[in-house]
Image 1: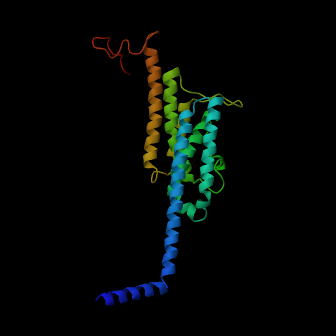
Image 2: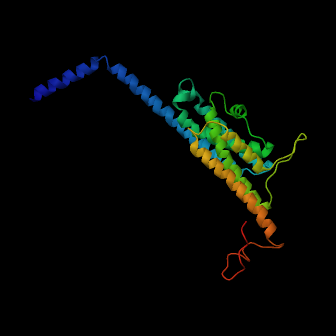
Image 3: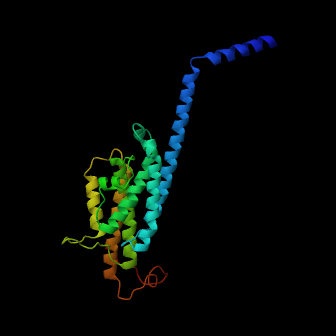
Length: 254
């Protein structure tokens, strides 16, 4: 029995050595290994770009002071380096094969640069302008551009509400070239109307809902600021006359 098993092992080894299928499967193995390595590189780059984009957004304010602009410039450079690193992996058919892996980074990049662009110019960055900021070889799809702008509305909402809470006024840009400036809420409403005029509900339903909620939050904050500002007496200090047992009656709601 032992000799028969030994003979069978020799037969299997000889068969595998001369099998015409082995080179084919080895090629498949190498191709799959290359695919997984490429995929992991793109995923890591996309995550790093996302993290850098969020750091840029957190540091931005209006107007962008020179120290902040100087601080975030290295992060822009790092993002460009990451895009350049994975550009060879996103050529030809691979640009669509790995679209899902790089998409998150592209959207976060659009959110960061569009927020900075708006604070500096009070204008929405175009798709071509955003594409020009990405190294050659990485394509910014229209979908990623639009999804990034959806996320921009959330940043504008936070920026607007924070500004109203600290300064008591709605953020407003400076008019240029004889064009009258408009406030942040007007720009958000225009952006909402532009999105709602597009047939994108089939692939961006959740983004549309969140965008509408962001604009509504700014509208409610602005309305509350105006109404409460008129109702409260001069010299009113938050927390001294409201929210205590036995305190004064709450102000009438309109």
